[in-house]
Length: 426
Image (cartoon, rainbow, N blue to C red; front, side):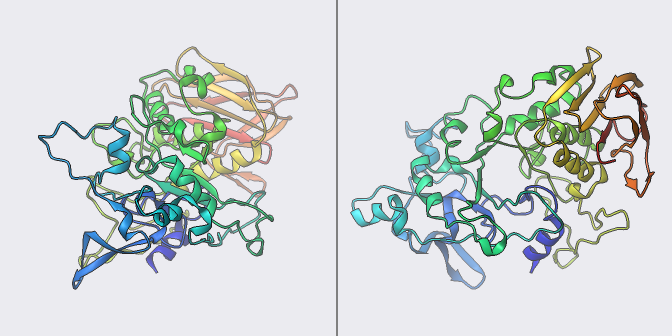
């Protein structure tokens, strides 16, 4: 019931982020799988009431579990650069399913998709009218399995059902977690032929930029020229359940709301990758669990009048500045970035085709005031960051575009948000 409640609450914009699911657990029956215990084929054996052992299993692949004992005084030492250890050893409690066996029938189970139990991915409930329907399947920690093992498993998943609104022959949208910030023994390029990859460098670079450590003027060519994956291979995000909690890092999170919203707005306005929105709960340290009462019962997620959440549920996806930018991205989809402007430092602006315009002021002590080309027809537009369009009225700032497509753009340094955005439908 809890998972269903969370899905109803968080299943709103773009890809769902499994921020509430611990890394070593499986998101059964939905879209979150850990590669090391793929699709519930392994089940821990109960030894005492309420307790399970980590190394005894029953199920289809019980005899294929391989655990390599590593002692500190051995010549073989655990490092992040070792493909062998990542994929064959039991690192951080993740079991390795071996695709190699002296029993030929065991090998066939892994290597031949026809021998795998076919799984049909369940329907995705979507509210409202959309142009395209995605069935996202996030496969966690794929570094721990060889690409040659994962391919047959993906192939064994059935096509999406046309009964649920998908086109005939439609495949699930596979994307895979590969942490590759450089200097790794296992590269994201080993997996991108199987599906999109979580591009961790994207959020790291944008966080540095909007924190002022790298002037945002340099974002003009942000993408593969920065060493990022090709756009068609990347799932992009600012933070996730891991990077939020990594001590000492520079990743922007909800705890830096102004800068965080600026980074998310750039992600959603930029023509690169497939974006994923974070939805999380408040925490004090890396071990803080979801909001709960004194009996450890997880608290419900109340929705306030402004559509944000209560009870320490952050619900970033319900922030007006973020969900309005999701609509911005949908409207400018298929257009390119043009008419880039910057002040040679930390103020930038650009158009998306003739459908949208956005400006950023990362100089937090300086007013942004420029007469700029918006690429939009003449008229009065509502800024979707400071407010929304309510009928024919702007609840926030408005922008008047003249017959040349130009407008006076102002972002005061003391404003709540350092972004202004307008599009053809406001």
